[in-house]
Image (cartoon, rainbow, N blue to C red; front, side):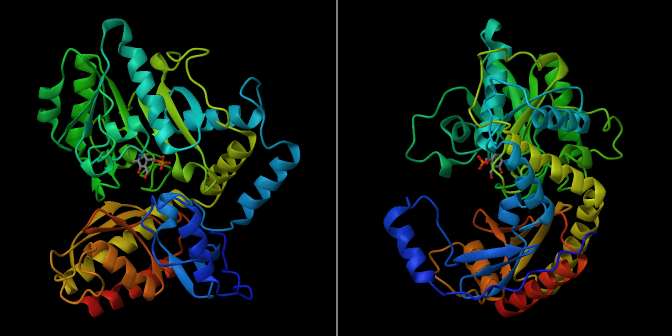
Length: 428
Ligand code: PLP
């Protein structure tokens, strides 16, 4: 694997307070931000404006596929920008065509639509489902409790978590939520209005919970039987994070019938662009032409620049065997966390996940967790990790996620585990 040596921090000016003041005065307070002001990154590390180094195992919430400031991405961006950054989707250009072909080859026969984010990719799937059911008056999409599908109005209606909906009611009609991994509940919920089922292969924001083999295969059978579209949200768990292109491919490895499993639609974003904002959705052959000319569009979708970056990321993943790396280094992280859970049962209750999508659930009442008790344990634990030089991502009140770059090196995983061990022993 290509060595990524973190660059030395430049001479820094600690203007954290001034930068935070700019936010307080001018940026909407939609995010609960941590008290960190970052300056730059290199590989799996970021630096704050005071020059402190952090190992970034959060990966921008599963976005920074190749880490920070990867030379191949920089080169691809510059090279493409010299030709053109944007042309309208009124015209053809090579990078979009090549990227669509690459994604189709990785998923299965079908076609892609390009957009700019995960929420927008899911919006595309919702419209595909509406179009599919339209002539028969079917419009409803069944999703799962604890799911997350984005922050647009349809995204929060699809999401199975009340906290994202609060204050934005009435919710857009046409979504119902069923318990995850409960096939019988899903079967019982199908109504004459149902057009599609949407699930994540591994629930990310919901706390890193993988779907069972029986659930995925059962949903496929149910959708075939009832003529429903099976839609998968691969925004967070996709793009080789689990060791295969999509998590369902990894989850179903070795299961009878698993290799033949294919959803009817799939949304992608995050790692697809490695930090360059990008989303896409794919629809299986029979449904790939449902959204005809004039039915769906977005100005920036599949721009030459975004596609050049995404193509370069795919090239590096293949050349450097990063799917295998995600599998192996992910296993190191999981094994190390399992050991910490055994050693510190009062701190870590359970470890879940696959490849480089790993979550650990905190014990109900950790003894020595400093910070405002009004804040969740997950937030307070993440703060402790920051002090120790490690970035991670909370999921809900009790779970902490590791979603690092796919080129995370074994030695970096070991450093992360060492810091986690130190913080566990402090909190125990
Ligand atoms: N779907 C899933 C599974 C996600 O995890 C996310 C974001 O966390 C989204 C959709 C929304 O993606 P975006 O924030 O790019 O709109």
